[in-house]
Length: 148
Ligand SMILES: [Cu+2]
Picture 1 (cartoon, rainbow, N blue to C red):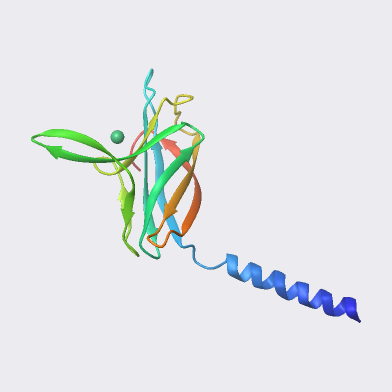
Picture 2: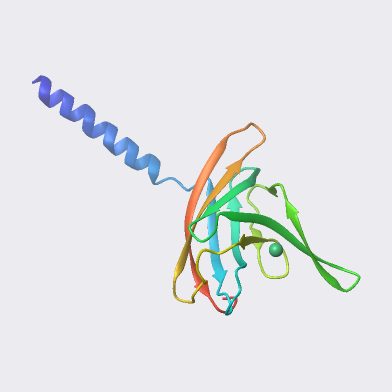
């Protein structure tokens, strides 16, 4: 009898956990890709669109391809493209925040290996909101020669 009850409780717990994991993710990443590098190039760039259910910030990025990754902004100043390193990238709730060529991007320095089209690069994206709540999102981005 007891075993049957215990089994029932466990089944309930498992189905509740499964239901939870099926909820819409807090942070959704789409259109993620990495540009293939040219011969001898040891710096790469990664792009993606980040949509968060609530206001948050991208504060740190780790990757299998590089130990040194910076969040950059890009803007035209007096006809010259300028890149700037950001301490964090602030993300507005329910807004697709685009990291795309000509704008925000992730810069990968001292690449461990050339980035070859057809392969993938994994990223761990660390987010932190104003209340200090941290969220970790891992993605795998295809390496492409051109913007999709
Ligand atoms: Cu850059």
